[in-house]
Image 1 (spheres, rainbow, N blue to C red):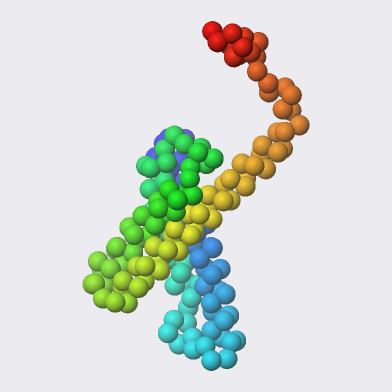
Image 2 (image 1 turned 180 degrees about the vertical axis):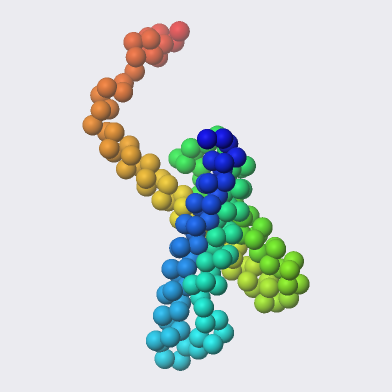
Length: 162
């Protein structure tokens, strides 16, 4: 499979994953606005759909940013602040288009800030899940660690310095 098709599939997968997560948050908000007395759900009555769309776009944009900024690095080599920053950058790409299409208004800027913060948080969650998956994979391989040791040439190089 070519590089572009693999990257496109990854961006689609990241976008769909974030969309599902954000729709779940929207579902919880929908339940709160429906069943908690005093909460008025009239402002937005379709929270799952309202959050799923920017979640998809944010996940796809984050995948693009990660592909450029995090190239040639493993998940254990990436820092949490850098990952959050890349997520926020992806969120700014999405929210910038929202602001550009609706004009610079206070509601557009608030939506931009919320989308940017949600993208940063989603990026942190993505890194945490990826590291958890890596740890489980290493634990599954852990039974064969004795077989993984240094080769004779590596031992000599380490001990002799040659």
